Each structure stands twice: as structure tokens, then as C-alpha cells.
Length: 349
Image (cartoon, rainbow, N blue to C red):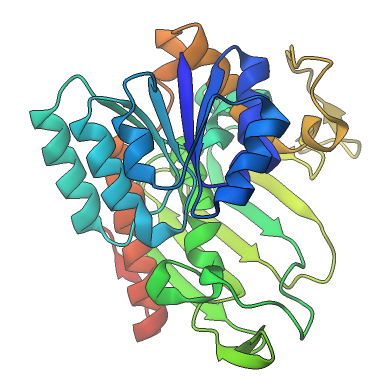
């Protein structure tokens, strides 16, 4: 299947090469910069360079549309792709629950279209195995979990302003990272009934050319989710951690602890033990995958998601995030923003 990519950031860094290794065919790119688009055409041997995303979506040779653009653009692009009966892989989040609800209604009219939200973390072997072990009650009753993402790309005072620092454009760590962590919490631990949120911005202004520009998006988001069945879940999404600690998952139960470390390895500790035990994972990542991606969970998940699409593995694809699940995540995310404004917990309907 031919893939058309909208955006030249994440697609260049991860998606194009990884999807190709997974068995899909990178076909076209759309970029506002014709020069940047041409660079990727030459780098990845793509067939077409579009300067407008509408041209890419309208191309009958494009089977799959991958949307990797700023948050505020997702709805319009996904809407057109659905109307053109494409398979859609869209980054999350959206700007509101209303946008997701509109996409659900649109998909009912264009039933040949299939839309997946690109929560590729669901597809990593470590998280798949962790979910399986939780469903088997491997550590007894779960009562507390932590899901953290800690980096330092916004720590310097001369950090360059981008849309990611503008809340009105869907920026801020709560949006651009918190959404995936919220989805992972629901994927592993079930329905969420309440959320409490606190956010922090280190520098109110970011560097924009020779001037400073207001940053309204947060650099650090802390959430406390209450699961209906599995206790509290602490979430931290930080771009100012000081060290690149990456992502970790820790789940505590009455009979032990399960954790995924920053190198994406899965471990287990019984209550009466002192040494963590490694849990073997099945992996068939291709040797051609670059060293900087092979231990990067987002890239690993991208490979297995892409492989599931290429081989049309229905059972695997059933684990992907659809629009109904995206709506649940968006409701929690919108509630998290409300909680941050009001400084109190918000119940999830």
C-alpha cells in the first residue's frame, strides 16, 4: 500500500524509513516548503512532492494518508481524508472533543474510510506483554501506577519558539505528550473516572528570531488519574527534566511490581524479592533499523503498527486506537485542561 505523508518532521525522523521496513510503500510527501519536500523525495526515493496537503489526499495512488502536522491542523486534514475514503493515520490530539465527534459522524457517511489514531506505543512488545500480564492478574490487584516521559528539550533559556509553545495551536506538553500517556493509561488500566492536573511553564517567553514570543503552552504537566478498577495513575510529561530519562511505566499490585524502564525493557519484582527479574519479549525488528530508533518506543511501535497494516493483520489492528477510543482520550484531555484552570479534580462522564 502506498503511503502519503503530510509533514516533514516526524515523518523524516521516524515514519518514512520505519514504514518502509515494515512493508509499506512510501509514495508522496506534502510540505509547505517545496525545498524540504524535495529533500525527502531524494532521501527516501519518493514519487511525488506536493506543496499542499489537499493535493496529496486527492491523489488516487495514495492508499494511506499519514498526518504528522501541528495539532490545530489535524481535524481539517482528517476530514478530507475520510471524505476521500482513505486509510488515515492521524497524530493526536485534536483541539476538542467536538472535533472528534464530528469525525465519528463523518466516518458514518464515508464507511470505506478507516481512521487510526497514531498511538503507536500500544504496539510495542513491552507494552503488549505488560497488558497481557495485567489481564492475567500477574501482580494481583493493581492499586498505583506511574507513566512518565522526561526530556530536556525546552530547558535552555534560548529555546526557539514554535507552535508547540502555543496553547491555541494545540501546543504544550499536556497536549503533545500527555495525550499519548493518557491513552496508554487507558489501554493498560481501563476506564478513567477522574483527573487532576497541574502544569508549569519554565520561561514565559521563547526565542523567536531576534525577539521573544509569548509561550502559552506548558513545559511540564502532572496528572493524577483515577481508574475505575486499578487505583491511581500518576502521569508526568516534562520537557524540562534536566536529564533525558525517556519514558518509564511502573505498575504496582498487591503481589508485586511490573515496570518498563527507559530502555524499553520489561521487569518484574515480587513482594518478597529484592532483585528485579527481566521478562523476555518477542521481537523481530529488522537489522536495517537504525541504532537510534531500535530502542526508541515510538519508533518500535511505528514498525509493528506499520507491519500490521502492510500484512492486514486484523487481530493486531483491532488493538489500534479508533475514533471512539480517541474520543475517550480527548474527553480526559479536555477535562485535564479544565482541571488545570480550576485547580480541582474533574469527573469524567
